[in-house]
Length: 257
Length: 160
Image 1 (cartoon, rainbow over the protein chains, first blue to last red):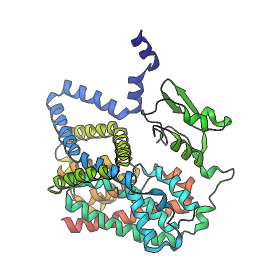
Image 2 (spheres, each protein chain N blue to C red):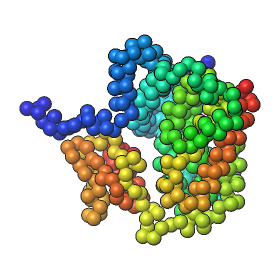
Image 3 (cartoon, rainbow over the protein chains, first blue to last red):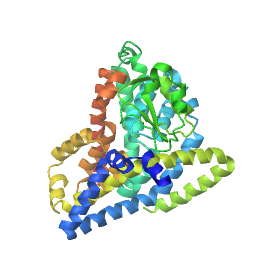
């Protein structure tokens, strides 16, 4: 009875998981085939992969601690308020810090950076934020060190910081604020997030409580679908950015990423 | 490499200190970090397996031929270009570049690849244009390519 209910509530978990991580699925099949057809090559592939994975596990505690500590102690709100045109050295420094401690791919930074720009942050600081978000990940430094060596990591880090500073200065001279702000498309679209499966997702921490659905206005409720213990975002819809941030805030499991 | 045990020790001390100062905050931060790592774990494992497969299947002398520094200018430009269009999380890029370097790749093209990989996004170009406009996007990405090549060149000089 119970097992029956379980299979019903998660009808295709394995297939869903396989679809979600196509590369991993492909790799598992490829490895099986290789070990079966060419056992020697298969073994050496496994050995190389195992070595790399062990090396990564070695730095995992550092990455974990650095991410936890920055999340716990860096007041993001305070920083985001101090990125204006007259912020000078402190603004530059904050843009660097904010960019390099954030987790997530660069496209996650675009809406955030745009929100800061609208709030009066300077183009220079926004460029610094975006670039350092992309290149300098503090927790990733440990990773870079493990695989490429301390000397490589430090040299690259220093050069990258210098390059970003220079890049932001040049960009500020060529691009004017209006070029960026004029880009605002009509109908408030610029402050909206286009929902697609790769830009946003709800992690498996979701308990299906549907609180997120409750705070949406009636005409938007359909973009969230809740099925037994897990909510899904329907792709292809536009969601105003402030609403999206509200969703993130209100989620008790912090499962909206 | 000796830095890693030291940093691990420091991380543990910092976490314990943070826990004593504010246990709720620390737990929240740790939860966030765990979720972040868990969400990356599958993709990361896949990339590690892909690297293993790639290095095992490629003929031993192919990589040194392609990226070994026989024609540095061409190799670096090529690697930078590949970096622009590839989407690999930076997290997984370091092991990849490390393996390629050990397999005989030259540091200059590899650094160019690493930097364009993270800084320049052909795949994210449409999103960036719709957020910041074409001019900003083109200039930011263009300058980033120049910066990547400059960084790689200087790195090549430093670490040879």
